Image (cartoon, rainbow, N blue to C red; front, side):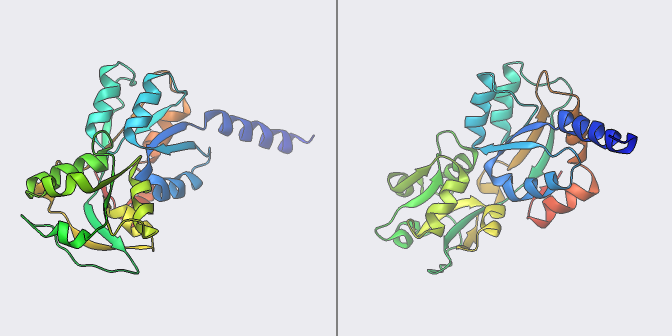
Length: 242
């Protein structure tokens, strides 16, 4: 093997060894996949609900970084002393939207007492599980603020994460759903029926942090997420960058 070839192998091995494992909220998939494709040491990324990922971390899942879709689940991990000190920060923001199947377009602006029940007809509304998943918790808070949760609650089709809720609407299995604006942007099978006013739910914040025992490469990828190149990709997909 030539010196140049040997150097290439060593560099490739070193990059792979430094590739971080990231646990990230499901709503980040398109943006984070695009960012990771531009990073030299391609990260290994597992997507899911923030609740499920936080519990995996608590149970010892081998990972280097965690990106949650809300502050509560990052708090959950931090309270268990599982974050690398000084690495936590707020990364992104998002909007909450009401969606309908693209083939059955609806316009229904969320407002106090709006006719959500009539719009559902005999169908159900697709939400990420409002008991634990951030997108579902935000949706429940918004419906409560607007005075219609009592009407909505019995008709919830609870999904394991926001992408599962999105899929229910895209397939026409639910006439309405609530997801993040970035999810709606990523799925041609749905249309945005309305946008929830920001003051109807807690601010949608995506915090990121390295986990205790993270490999050295985690810090570099964490820093890369704030570079202009990554920021532009997040913004392209509809996220607000902090």
